[in-house]
Amino acid sequence: MLHEIRVIFGDTDQMGVVYYANYLRFFESARAAYWRSLGRSYKDLEAWGIALPVVEAHCDYKRPACYEDLLVVEVDVTELRPASVRFGYHVRRDTTLIAVGHTRHAVIGTDGRPRRVPDALRDSIPAIVTPGAKSPGA
Image 1 (tube, rainbow, N blue to C red):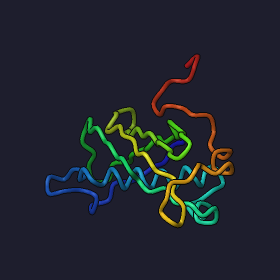
Image 2: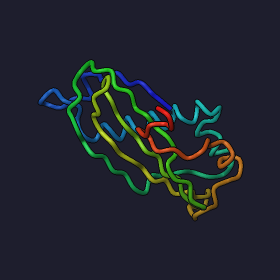
Image 3: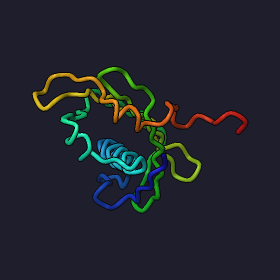
Image 4: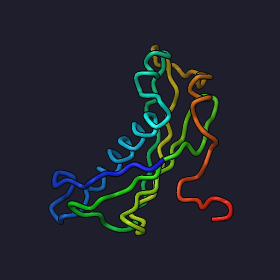
């Protein structure tokens, strides 16, 4: 799934480039758009009595992004375990790879204890793919 983000001035640091921690915000925005693209939202998670807190986050910075850049974040579920979900991200400006990262999310109930991925959530997620990978024959 592709999600566009326009870099605003507040996303940049004193050197005029996107502040490193803002990539995690870009990842979050892309995840929310991913759920919407499936006809779901984080409100569905609440209705199912679960939450998906981030328990691991990683980002490799390849090139700088600057104010007014139009970035495209490619996001997909890259791993689905019984009680966790891993998202992968590729951030590009045109064809230039800006950053690559992932987040892992535990599945927890309202009591804060681990839960299995609900069937409704598992059934919503398309086949597992790796962002940035070329499809067969491409």
